[in-house]
Image (cartoon, rainbow, N blue to C red; front, side, top):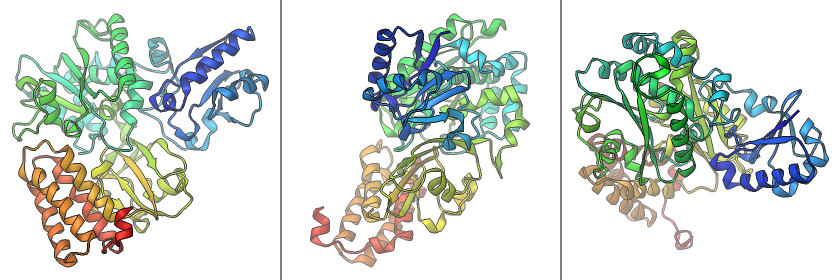
Amino acid sequence: MTVTIFVPRDAAALALGADKVAETISREIRSRNIDARIVRNGSRGMHWLEPLVEVRTDHGRIAYGPVTPADVPSLFDAGFLTGGGHPLCHGPTHDIPFLKGQTRLTFSRCGVTDPLSLDDYRHYKGLKGLERAVAMSPAEIVKEVTDSGLRGRGGAGFPTGIKWNTVLNAEADQKYIVCNADEGDSGTFADRMIMEGDPFVLIEGMAIAGLATGATRGYIYTRSEYPHAIEIMREAIRIARDERVLGKNILGSGRAFDMEVRVGAGAYVCGEETSLLNSLEGKRGVVRAKPPLPALEGFLGRPTVVNNVMSLASVPVILDRGAAFYRDYGMGRSRGTIPIQIAGNVKYGGLYETAFGLSLGEIVETIGGGTASGRPVKAVQVGGPLGAYFPPSMFDTPFDYEEFAKRDGLIGHAGITVFDDTTDMLKQARFAFEFCAVESCGKCTPCRIGAVRGVEVMDRLANGEDAQDQRELVEDLCNTMKFGSLCALGGFTPYPVMSALTHFPEDFRPHTHAEAAE
């Protein structure tokens, strides 16, 4: 019987040498005349174990990692094709603690299947949601998504069903579904992992969104820094079209939806939905004033659903298992699961999908294992480069939209970046202003000018110039940016600045010349 060996083709695994590992395994198979095949799957999301090689055995899939090309001969010698013991063996993949504790709904197939095998996708319950959706009316689909409690996973947390309902009820000869895959936050990789590891779930989610709203055309807008995701998504779309999952007659229903991938140049501001739409139309990526809302006047002035990858990829399980099943997970108004991306100075970095409600401390200390450096955690930034810094004293905060908002924080795209006690929080606050200054589209004054002035104020604080006056100036500047900016780039920059200033006041003291020179 042919043995199946899984070697990830996810970008994180590739960066750590997965291609060379696959090539070496292939040579060993040939030289030893073994009946085996290699499947290039997605990542399981345990980055400290990549490249993670798995073997399908009579006892399930057995994991080995991190594997280097030099390890491959010894793996064969140890009988890893039948799950043999080896120093790199972790036993059954599903028993690895990091995976075992998760609730994988959106990522249930990621790392399990061949990303470009529609047969694999169907075998693991793919297309069940779309099959149900084609038999429903648009209003019934929208109600199912609304009742599930699904909210935008891109940062704002806006109820997905309400947005869909607005587009459904809008009068137009053409409507669009736009997937915001411009994943620009530092320490985030969930969108990329889905596109590279389970592209059909995104295609299915977008097709369901099209059926729900009357949209017949969709676009995935992603960044040029994601070449592997772009390649895989385009091939998956071609396969889906050939198999009538997309096109003029979806699954034989007589209803139409088709889509394509569009690539942006990687401007951070194009993660904001109106800047994205401008870029998609071939214009400069600058923020549009709202109203009108994109749901009424979006792409090419037509009603448009703009949803994040995670929002759309969550839809198939809702249609398959029902709104009540999905809503049963989570807490408060935060329903379902959230793919938390753990990064920075952390021992076990990776993607952890779980229901809303875990405390920040559990995520960082228990799941993430604390810092990779072994030093105490000083701060955790949640929500990307514009997220607030939380000190350990706030680690009891539940991972929930409203709970974070109560503490002047935001979940954003659910990226978590860990910092140890060697971090200078004044420098981190300065970086937030500098990042905003570099990435600003320049349309509104609070963002364009405020960020530049913020860098200057931070430099004066570091030099000990009128410290109290500079602190007051920072607070006033942040207030202006927060409430005066057109979009979240300028509006959210105050979060990291003010949280650093509030929770780490000891770092906002004059720096010595030696410190400043570092």
